[in-house]
Image (tube, rainbow, N blue to C red; front, side, top):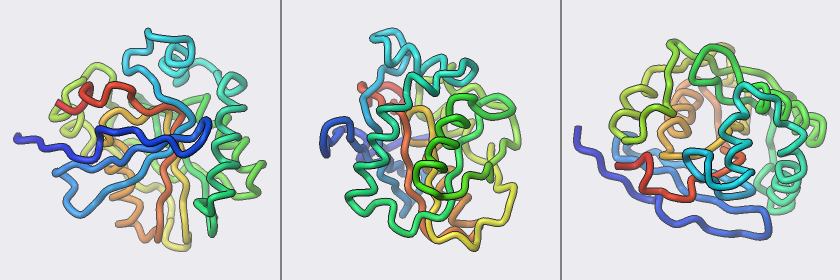
Length: 203
């Protein structure tokens, strides 16, 4: 499979603790998504404490550690009008079955903070292990068709999707694709960290 990648290189700083990067892959023609995060992170989780906590956040409860950065990011997005008309918060399912305990905790915090309902509307159709695959071709093959919408989303104007990290953008774009196909009108993607080395996960 020939892979071409654009828009995944530069990380743009909007303000203190608010950055973004665009996910845009040739395998999703006409589809891209801006991903907001409070910090950069390192793909393997070994470079600093923040990345290490993020790396282990799927199975270990790390909500208190990320809470302040996460809420600060939401407040800045709200002040910029990025959360206008937001009427649902959801999270990305884990690579294995179930959901990250940390993302579940943060989504509950976001729901209370923004007074917007939180509901799990995406589920896996098969278990995947993305962290074992650094090459984009492998990640795309695993992600495509690995998730489905479990509830009706056609009534929502804007859905915020929370993930742990944006590495290549394959998960972000697959989720946006299935939500739009399910009738959602607009998606905003946020995560706890954006890959500090965009060449990892995109080759």
